Image (cartoon, rainbow, N blue to C red):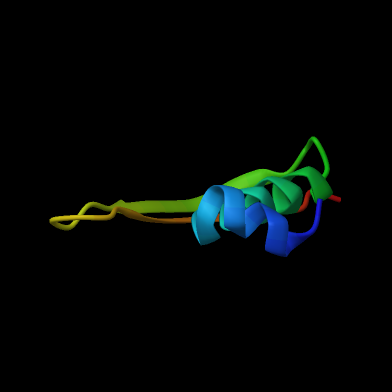
Amino acid sequence: MTHETMMEKYGVEGIELIMWLVMRGALGAEAKRVHRNYYAPMTTGMGLITFEEQA
């Protein structure tokens, strides 16, 4: 399925979620979370998470 097809079906947010899942899958199983933050304004929440690959 192309990005264009997925955007038509799920919207831009659906593509963003898939990209986050791919990013996490690219990290090793031993990756360590070093930071996380979530901000919930009046409408849409925003999140940030930082991982560090363990050698």
